[in-house]
Image (cartoon, rainbow, N blue to C red):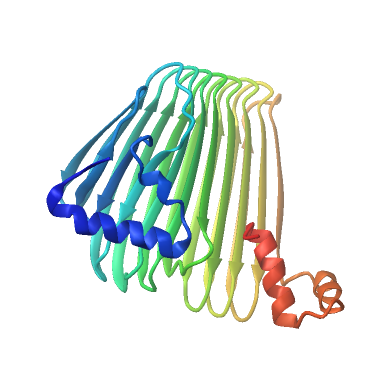
Length: 317
């Protein structure tokens, strides 16, 4: 990993934040393709055969291009680390990712803002996936108490290609979150989007996932889970558009409410081809009472049982 000498302390501080959170620090190794960002500076950059990352420092942030060649299959994920170590400020990051044909890659994206008290993070990600390729993009956030996050991801999934996008903000406060993910699918392309968010206190969350099934026999599955406590507000919109012959899409939203939280979910399906098929499943409500009783019968308190159920919903085992 090439580290700028004058930024070694910032690099070490980010690694320490990873250690405190129990995250995988091996992602900073030389065998991993990676870009490490702190504020508006690139403090680390590493390329491996088949992956070229270029970074440019811009006003209040960084723009990066990630190009993956044809027929590349990596044993390790590509690491995109975006950090901010101050308590206040604004950061903008732009990622343009181009994946060649018949490649198989994973991205691990971490946003690390451990001391944020009055901080805005804006992220724009554009991903183009070539024919026959498979991409997994795992996005996890570590926040302080005062983060406003604006995220927009646009994905183009080529013929016979697959994209799996996972977003998780469950261990730290979301405070203000506006998340939008839009995907366009070519012939026989496959899309899976999964978002998990936990909102507490007076957090305000807006999530929107949109799939355009343009190609014949394209498939999409959009899943979102939100847990809202206290006075939090959560608004979830999932949209699927069936344009291609025999395209299939499914939307699934599950929200749990506790306290005075305000939760709204809107599934929107639109078919413009009589050979396409779209379905949806949505639920909003309190924690399952039968599950609570069953766990409490085994000796757990109501709060302990509720926490266990929530961890199961959010995949925090």
